[in-house]
Length: 416
Image 1 (cartoon, rainbow, N blue to C red):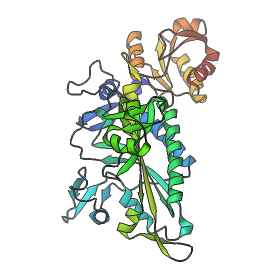
Image 2: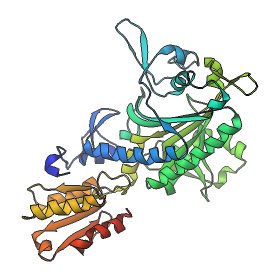
Image 3: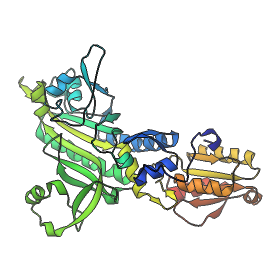
Image 4: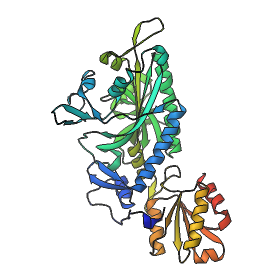
């Protein structure tokens, strides 16, 4: 991709009404556009980051036998009324609307009831279980406050997953597999060392849940973490959890965190309330066990922007960066640059080529602000020596690399 073909422009200053670091950086670097509080549009750069995050999640979900589908945003009231989650007194984040015939609909904030309604036509026998499905979808939540940039949005992209089982034991076993898959996801995204599985309130879902919380100064949660990092408890359930786990509060350290994932066990509650059953091996009707698993895709992007940044801008990990390389060309090197880009891309290295007629300093500043992991400079001077200037975003000084060795060096530096 050439910068002259990309409509996105960077900016020196963030909007005066934007207080969150993640949104300030993402707006300045050209990844998002703020529409209103809690609502952001994503540019081609932003979409590439979201798709990278989604692909990591997709691979780990498929690795544990989950299959992808897509559910509808529009929700009819009756399936939610059956479980007492339609009323605003029960769930206060609904966006609701009406059709031309005045019938009421909701905009999905989650999909437990919807997935049960879909599965009733497909899961009728114990032979059909277990089943696990997931989707990436834009969710709508009528949040009272939305002040943390893309970390807390009223409209956001989420990976939600649902598994249905014939027994508690089978659900518990799969639930543990998902925990391990989530740990792999956050490790691959570069935040595994600072992300913890925590005991938390289930809110509108269940009494208790497990959250995946990442240490982040901009977070809205408080965790109490053991010194060996083996136990992490959300402040809101601290007393109950301490009693359940049997630990001393004095042994826990207080840290500020942001939630990046949340998982729940509903058991047979949804199945029984909605009257959806399967037939067991003895021919008896039995309720299904349901568990739900979420990862906030746009929220993860916000957390990465908060944690992986410095005074120059964003610092993306290679696994989530929109491009691996920011190629800044200086002087009359267009033909050589075209061939150079083709060579890099043939090796699987994604390149954003800054071919603009502007000062080198502007190109270097944009490369830093956008956070592309590796910057390469190709100029008339370097080409005279058949070299390119290569620099990691996290390093201060570049190195000169022979042109025919750049691919190998970039792959080595970025561990591609």
